[in-house]
Image (cartoon, rainbow, N blue to C red):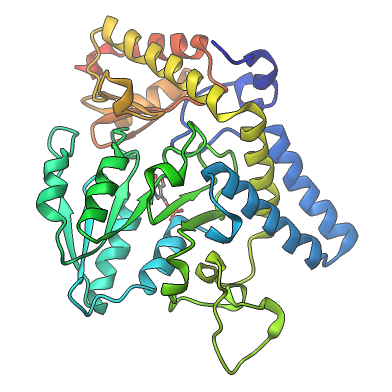
Length: 380
Ligand SMILES: Cc1ncc(COP(=O)(O)O)c(C=O)c1O
């Protein structure tokens, strides 16, 4: 293992009591993040209403997200959920012309798909790209994306089965057909480097509460600089304005940057935590985190195979992200049973979701595999 886990583990109190391998649902709480929340309460108690400090922190968070994606801070809007990000983007699109379709892959998290379906009231026609045996071949995208497509809503890593799509080739295809692409990278960010200038999505959405170590209530949207002036969200608010403090009630003057996707008062406590989470990821380094991810997901796949468990995830490391999934005939019950033994995982469909992060060790993998082995009848 490339990472020195002995020190890192000390920052995550949960490992004193549990074998926590469920970061696809919620990242483990780091003491640095806990201290950040305490700092918010201290500042509030001692300073009262330090709005300048809080606005500065919002900008610091924006810059850290920009660094994470190799984007410019003006390309980052800070929101309270992926849903808020997608709603703001959707509200800025027009579906009344020739490009009236939105293409949604079947790996989508429900919220993104539901938001695109809600646009049917504004003229959008939603087309789905079907999944076959946990895969969506490029030809399926080719068949659905057309000159009628306004936007392709693309899932980077699927929350149900852990499949990681080769987004570069899908984005290239969509662009050849003149469609925009919004990438939902929530299940990937924080686990490996991702550069928006290489894959070139037009928009990207993500949030803080999983592998980025923050909490709920803080998310973001990346929008390519050249596109931002062409989009005027109908979801608006004073923090989306060119001058937040203009207090102009006679017009809506959106910011020239991706702040135009924001709306009201930012979630300051979560911004404190978000900065701490992103700094921790930065300090450890995405290259090291990625190398560790490959090692530890490899050990989970290997151990599962040796015990005869049915991997849903491909053995090919380029086809999955940080989450490995295993078939179970009663995943809800099995998750409850292993939790009694102190092992925390989760489930969706008929899959156990095992989602390690840089703080997990090979010892955690052994404990998980031992706990599963004692309920082997539920893994056939
Ligand atoms: C891929 C993906 N997108 C979006 C979400 C949720 O977004 P929101 O921040 O709107 O709750 C999740 C949550 O699990 C997710 O896995």
